[in-house]
Image 1 (cartoon, rainbow, N blue to C red):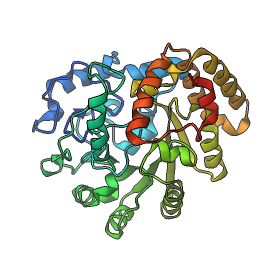
Image 2: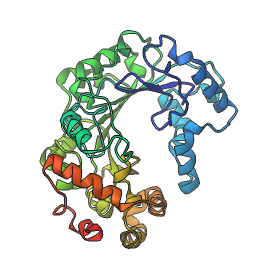
Image 3: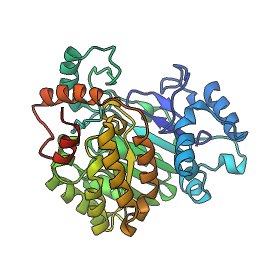
Image 4: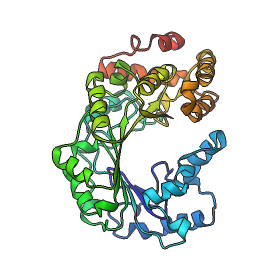
Length: 374
């Protein structure tokens, strides 16, 4: 990936991969650097890749490989995936060039998901201001971000995208900025361009964007849905399940490659089977991943008694043939349960967030509430 890809965040920060830990990354790795792709930091990383040497920024993938023998790193090393993304320089021993863009234009978003924050959602601004007044900034259980208006990313004005073969659109919510999507796609060779759109299942493309997407070599849609029914509305505040399902149905009708991407957190871990059953019934490609932050929402914070009950649930799910495609997820989930956590972190932040938003989840997941009530 580092030989051909750039991951561009709403604030203009750049990483070589979407799951890369920015260990000792210099401040020069951002869109204000006109030659950022050839920065020494990225060149050194590429040298390590060529020599198959470990880099601390790739820790997440190494950990997943130890647990489940599979990671994003192993996925993108598959020849078919490399051909699809255009990330072939490592395999073909060619000079690095940008073939894969993973881009978020800004943090403009119409949702304020529990696991998110103001750096990725403008809808989070008001809650973040209240949160700062209620929580000590030294408390690392919540990642405070800066929020000074929409964070724009002007990379579009400068880049040469003639050799780009794959674009992954992220946000914020990318479908709130369809003109920017269109502008970037038009700078590429559409007949050789594949698109991966990650969207929150609240909005559909306009006719102009639909038209240009149909000109591309292929388009895949990933809809971010974390739970079934009203629990999804709670976790992805701003969504309604009725609109979510209608949006899923629209994309399923209009695009051949559709997937549902979900995050398992302490709030929904015991009821992930409800969304899995929904996706299986509708024959949707579905993947659950573990939440990485904020820390208070991590599953490891469950008390031991709850973990023991959850382990039995996971074992039962693992025995069911219909859930065979979730085998890797179950392994990662079992490992997460075995990590040390602190339910007090969850109670502290959950009570503050519930107060800020004047809401509670007890009726949406009474089983979990009974596990952790104090």
